[in-house]
Length: 445
Ligand SMILES: Nc1ncnc2c1ncn2[C@@H]1O[C@H](COP(=O)(O)OP(=O)(O)OP(=O)(O)O)[C@@H](O)[C@H]1O
Image (cartoon, rainbow, N blue to C red):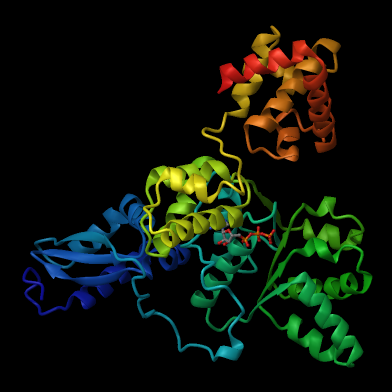
């Protein structure tokens, strides 16, 4: 009951009023991402208590929507109530008061329920791809078509695609959504040809409103699949249906892809996802732990985030491993317990060194400028220092060969490998190089 309104309103009714106001003032995607999982708990001393599922969501909502929520509450009456957010792990999803009747199971797209926008941590590495996905979810078939998302293994391409699927499914319950891996598409095509069911196959794919195709790079070299996909693509595109494709590389790098398909993949927006930076990795781990209702200290999260730098699937796996290790041994999950749990996967490394710092220090030692090392010059006096810097980046950081190549002016990973092998040999045969490496390690550690 809300004394200030003079009307017997339940806290649920008040919250619905707030939601309606908020819904009018933000985008659908924002609404579904942040407000659907809030549950009103009750009212105590003029404060409306709201449950949110994670502290990440709490921070976000507080930073971005506090004013709007307060404004909505203010509309209720003279004495504006306050509100408070509380983390209640696993808070029940509130019934969607705006949604039409649910679809039968068989018609639901095969989407991973965990892969939503709400569960996607946005960082500098994926903000473009995220923004594009949100835009597509808001107006499928109109924003960017096709949306082509590419990036390395385990960086969230499938997650983003599914997030669009979930969001569109909620916003436009009548739309037909199909998620398929390129492998499944190919297998279904082969079966359809064999069983003389091509008409059915075509009807199935050409009648969808949102087609999500994962790992499209696997279409390379498959002529019949390319041919069929080309016609599916055209049919959907012409009917303003949305297509989203994911790949481990941009269209131009997919070899043996027919030119007509390549050019179509390039019609819309091509966006990439890069490996996450340290802060984003910590945020992902934090969210992951909270979703499982687990408390893990910042120190442990940071330790794990420093060990796994590129693949988010592995990052999450490392956290789970550390948690399992601590609970099986009945000990608290401290930094050293985490280090033990991960010791057979990762060599212990206290602190990861910044690659730029390595470049600076090596350049300084040879009286060069850092730009000389990362630039294209091939002067003799630059080549060896550059190779030493590459070698140290490999040794002291978790950067992969292609990442090192990227750091050193977009060089190929085979060049990096050659440099590392060369310095490795020198470090065994040449005393000067040996002592140089030792002293550089000392200043960098
Ligand atoms: N930004 C993110 N926030 C939260 N979780 C993420 C994020 N990016 C990736 N993940 C998680 O990392 C795991 C791997 O992501 P996903 O399967 O989408 O990667 P992918 O790029 O499609 O990989 P692959 O190349 O193997 O197909 C998933 O559990 C996903 O939820």
